[in-house]
Amino acid sequence: MSNTLVVYYSLTGHTRQIAEAITAAHDADLEAIEDTFNRDTGLGRPRSAIEGLLGLRSSITPPKHDPSEYDLVVVGTPVWAARLSSPVRAYLSQQRASLERVAFFSTQGGIGGKWALQNMATVCGQWPIARMIISESQLNTPVAEEKVAQFVSEIGKG
Image 1: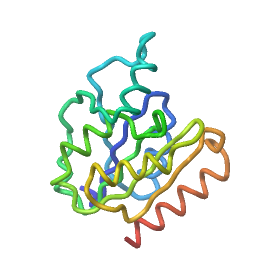
Image 2: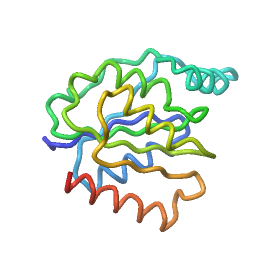
Image 3: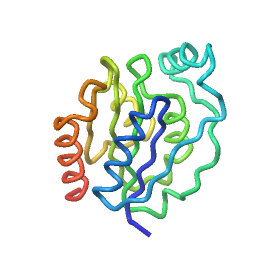
């Protein structure tokens, strides 16, 4: 078992893409947060934005990995209305006492990644050893690759 767990929620696949890159570069275990609400419906995206804006938690399935068994848990979220996603808010709220050290990353279509990362620290109750924001326009570019490499370097030193 790795001593690092990468946990993420992804609606569009962007956050999953970055989580997989971090996992491959850091030899970590990977887990997707599974939301019980189907957000691919007509009302799914507006509901997601409202939940993000209001700081609500969604209902998620129990995690497969116990975060207390890891030295570091890296958590990734998409940005919803300049906030962290409700599934990630639920995970951090539920697992708060089990998180020894954390690092955070977010993916964003526009702005708000900085606020999402701050929200994550507040919900989690601790400041991350590393943070990263990837914009949609940076995906699949050398910029994203460089950011992931820098992030992996930071969590390796953490």
